[in-house]
Length: 268
Length: 313
Image (cartoon, rainbow over all chains, first blue to last red; front, side, top):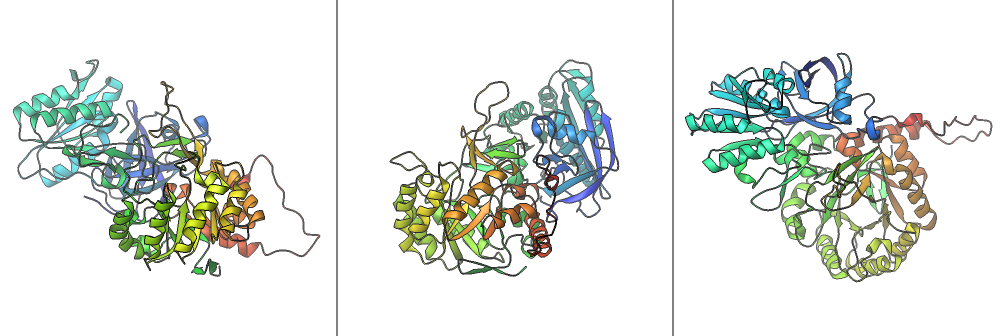
């Protein structure tokens, strides 16, 4: 599902900024934008002082799936991992953002009667949170299985509010000790007819893909790759696909049917 | 702003796109018909088309630098036949003239591309990408005046359409290469292409980009572009399309003052798909405000040498 974007980036006001454990949540008013579809993303840049950070960066905007979109307010979630997210993390209510989107293609609802299992964790929460809300609105049964490094990161689970959530942490500080694939394997044992929706760091996503492939479970993966533009211009965000060649995650993804790829690339 | 004559093409304004920095077909899927209603360029330059399809380089393909980026895309395209069958009908529906960029690794390949493109009335002009190694010497054709001259001599008779030669900055004397193109009948020169550049993966020290090296673009190369456009303009009389790091109207104006007839926006398109429209408006305002003064007493504008106040994003 693709909702088209207004042509050109727009300058919008930050309306809120808060911490959620190790993550930062940013809200922005987007009164002129359309209602996006879960799994779609936006390109964000601070309107002021985008540049002249660490290594004289950032320069390019950064891609983020939205967390929620309510009545013209968009929210995003990220972790400070570089000069772009560091600068975005400085923004406060009243500051301004450049925003382009919604971009890309989002999730597709499961075939009739199937339950949705939302598997992921870490920085992969946002598209799953938005999808949980849409599934609830459609009356489709869903459960979220989320993995995190530790308790500070597991606070991100609180940002997914529209489905029951099971949590696993690497250190056992919250929920079960283990990986999200442990939770997913158990859930698929109970309901082998579920459809899986996944987003997370590449290694987690690859483990989810491999598990679903081994059990012949349909899965849709929200992938990530470094991208300069978000609208098909730069050809930077490619992943190799089974049918041959590459496809651009920004216009042909970021949500892909897992059957289209042999593996989640380490850089995706 | 009055219309611009470029090699016999009448263009609405002097701002076009750099080849490979805008996919109008993908953009139409993303933005819908608003793209056509507010098309930012006065002519559209296609990405590079090769005779055979190319998948492009393995990822990673991008690296952000201070005020710019390195790309190692590797010219993915459907190949000539796919371009003519699938892309051309959609590009012909754009509201501006279409310039098709082609590249071949031999004279025979380039000749086949030029002949095929020449046969299509939807295409207004041809741009040759000569940032390609010569199969005999291993040097980029566009780095060597003799190789480049021989290529232009071979393909010039094959088309009556305007023939633009896109030069690489990775050469000792770009103006000498431009002179060779002019001498063999090129109608225009476009420059600069990206500067060869490299990045190492954090931690491993291995090259980050799948292609090993890539091309640097963005504001980081703006001053290089200005110098090269000025150097070429001093040595040739044919039209010049100037590009490199334009993000604002004054950068476009500088390239025009240095001798370009058109300017191309490249990497800035990535930050905002409609940036070229803003740049064109800013350029128009500057040109209206800066009609030449005849007064010798007019105060010179102050210049702050190391802090360029006009340079904010």
